[in-house]
Length: 138
Image (cartoon, rainbow, N blue to C red):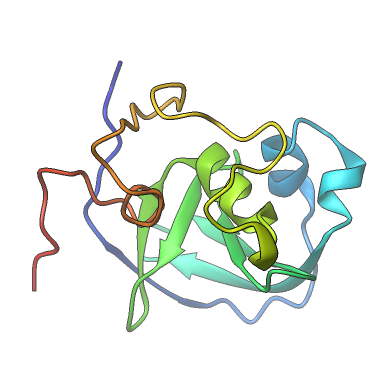
């Protein structure tokens, strides 16, 4: 299985005001009940010209930044994004603040994530794109 790149990529607001729900629907396997929990916020254009749609969960206030084929990214700072496991990011965004530390219904278990998340990685480090053996570079 190919490993996703953990290298940050620069991105900035595209100026688009037209919501695109396709990436969220793809990530949610076309589950409208999941998608309707999010608000479309804005669009980012990465330096490689990939557009990212930014969605925010109504309760948890957590963001999903998704590419056209549901590629998931987290915002670093400033204007930097890193590719992460989409399913894991969605599970974290759906996790109620009252249930932190407990998996959301249908959440991926360690070892089940398509990116190879394992028990050695904390949930936050995993979603932030950090492997247990990797350190954030300056």
